[in-house]
Image (cartoon, rainbow, N blue to C red; front, side):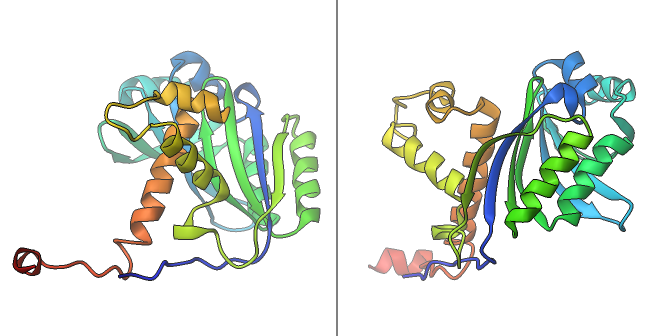
Length: 236
């Protein structure tokens, strides 16, 4: 028997937003490659003037992506960190306009919970510790001529991220998937249909489910769960 692990955080506000791909990072590569998808892994602050985005890339061959990257005006430098075959991890330096927006996340004490991009749109989810910081961040986007379309703004419940460390969005995705028969054999709903049900992109659904599965496993099997040995199972 195990005790559910809970991650404590300061009470904050969740903002789910969409940004047009043509106004944000990697717009040139997105237009050239079409079905390529991006996921921002993390943003590391080097100092007050520079941040280092780490980005996963999927759905494209390395050579084709790097050719498109070389012609992308939103990227100044890029270095391959990891090549897993089906996905690539890069560290990038973005141009000043995009760099400013990313740095805003750090300056306004916001946590970027999720960020997935496609040829059409970037879907972002932030955790802001102060409501006033949301307005300031929106002003920064406006000044940079980037449309910031807030889809949902809601308060995070104080004290925890939810059972098994799930965010509200991840919990909803798992719940709807389970109720709709996504985990049945055979499945009663496809990934595309499930994404439509949740009103999100197929890539965003895949990312939400992946992170949700990771959170559940980490906070159950990966934490303090008691796992019986093979010998004890055989003797029961």
